[in-house]
Length: 125
Length: 491
Image (cartoon, rainbow over all chains, first blue to last red; front, side, top):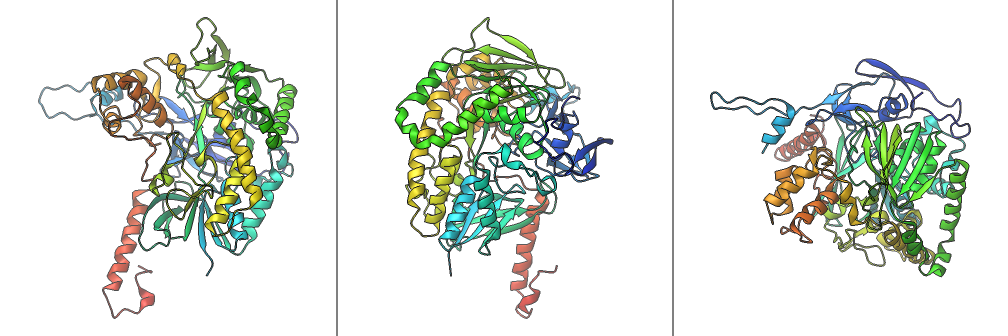
């Protein structure tokens, strides 16, 4: 078990919770009603659900209170949802979000595009 | 007709303000972006996950329940949850001179209900969020703020990891450690950056004054007991200076610091972890106060008078946006603000409590305030702006090349602070690093990073719907033969 529900008795009632199931990129993940989508994923040992635009690195939850926007992902077809604030509903479908930076288009003939997000970001004015 | 008060924020300060305004005979609309009252301090699971022993995880839970019942049960109180104030703007029709824009609905879902409120008076109780200084690897999944760890523990009963280090500065690290340990995680260390001597000096000055805040001593003893029970080591003059891992955090480096928070070479110690929670300070959530026109002081808190009224008549502020002071101060300030906003005389006991706990809060910066040496643990690749992925090296190089440029042009050149969070996480850090490069104490354009006219991003479709409805109404007004009840509502 990597990360998950508390093992200690008394902190959490053993049987007052309803199990739900969500999906991350099509993969089923079990959780408990009342948790946020971020909470369900972290409890299941899945700490990331976004890739950063520039470096294409994994990101997940950071601030936990809706301030940092690190935890945004697509939920049921809607993009940019903060998973730390959205309560999970049985059947929710979360899709990893990656908004790669656009590659600059050159007009000059013969100009080569270095390609890749890092090159693109250097040239973004 | 009684006064209509709008209270923004349903944490301790906002709840206390609501109660006091109701006591004074006013009507109150209490709004909060979350779907439960209580704020971050009394964060708790929703009813479907109710816990009969919830009180164990909180301080002052009985007080919360009383406030909650009062505001939910009073017919003069309209509690709007899942309701985000996304803008405040001048409005000549509004009795307080301001219109407050509200978006209500599921978090970040399409189709939020948009409305505009025009209250007689406004109480801002928007609170604060964690300030985490950058360090190499802080963008890795598994690196959290202390507030995130608490939110998961208190609100969801989820533990951030099995092997956890908690680091940063200030008394807030203690409840974070206890909450995390309470979820069954092993807290390997709590690393407090300030040296023990400074903590002792900060807290022991004029000790008799602390007598009036005896409840805090009880709280501290509770934490000490929990630390002993969970065998949590507390290290002063120590902090996390790097996080390591590929797709998630796998280890952290702890180092001893000198009095100015410079890492002492040779004291680094690497520990395997699967989560780390770091909070060095708090940043008040000022954007709505700034939008309302309130003056902010040089310490970057909202200026209020002894009735908690800001420099804008009819606009009051309470809680962390007037100074980081903790729950007791927030409750006292809220009670005063709510009464004053309703046109009543503030409760004298609340005024006394405010005086006592202001003194308590003033000790926190002396004992735990950020010291400049933290810059020494940065390397050129350390991200400052997490959203736009701007590294320290690029930020400093740009600042050096554009000597004397204003903050706005430096932000546009580097893109630091222009990402999705609008500089909430990195703003203060970006300002400090850019000012280092110029040697000045302010930017030539006098700009700061706290001004955000759109306080919460809204979907363009939802904003367009406001304009469309306004157009429809205008259209209906131009057609004099239309009976008023069909004025464009059902289009």
